[in-house]
Length: 208
Image 1 (cartoon, rainbow, N blue to C red):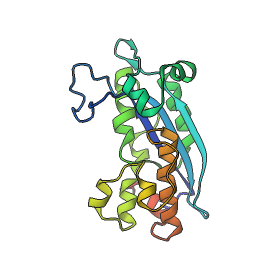
Image 2 (image 1 turned 180 degrees about the vertical axis):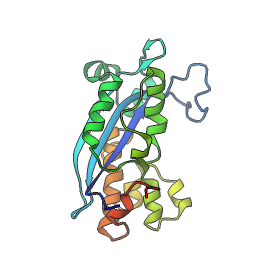
Image 3 (image 1 turned 135 degrees about the horizontal axis):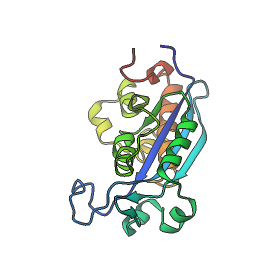
């Protein structure tokens, strides 16, 4: 399989409340982890290996019984409040179609598996299929291992801590979809420029 010319690096923000991830969303008032933001950047897999065009889409969180107001903790964490969600939020299906159009035919990567933790629950609750099949997605963390970073070291990293770990200036804020996606893309570009990764490493993991 030939090496792709560009990749899409994305990051999602989904509803949460204080302590919900540690409780595995078992608290009596924990919200469903419904998708609220898809942020993405296009990463060139040719010199100068730089992040390019960005994508920022706000999604209206629709729960099992209608619209869901974001908890105060979620707004504090992400900066995404009810006013912006009301003004800019799109229906889930439209947001995913726009994201699919932005991603095109190249590989799609997140730090971890945002397609499982953010997109899949929202699609399940909405009763729709994601327009992008699971095989299109990949975990950017595996590329750090391919670049020689020990797995135990990778396990302790998050999208918003990656830049500092590699001595790069951090993004202006954490827990923003576009900023976190750009942070991951910048680190991957840094590893490409250093010769620790090759464009062929971005071919879908496990693809023949």
